[in-house]
Image (tube, rainbow, N blue to C red; front, side):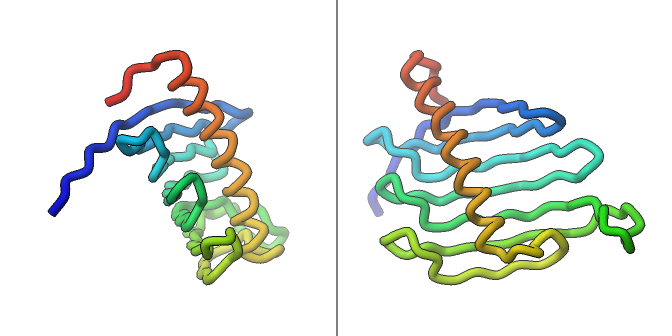
Amino acid sequence: MKETRQDTVQGVLEQGDATSYFTTFVDTSGSVVRLEERLDLGEYGSRSVEYGLSAGSLFFVREEGTLRDLSPSGAGDLLPRGFEVAYDSLGRIEGSSRYGPGFEEGVEAAAGGAREHLDRLLELVDERLAAGVPKG
């Protein structure tokens, strides 16, 4: 079995009340192959997200966490929430699943938001690598 070494790049992104702590796994060619994120949304909940990439293309995103129920009928409870989306080689959604609140616009909208967020995290990783931030 061939052994592959992966370096890691860690970072923090703060946006309003949300704080994202992330670890990016970079293969020996310098390509990001996985990004794991812990997103703290303060009183609104928290999420753990995993992104899988191959040759720079997203092939899956998996999110699990809690989200405060702010619906008119809700009691403000923290409810479990999650989704998983798989993409084909052309970037189209191949399959998906979800549970919990917050999917009024469908899992595709949540996946689109996750994809945009991933792009911002990857920009930060590129900046850190360009600045010579040590890899783990």
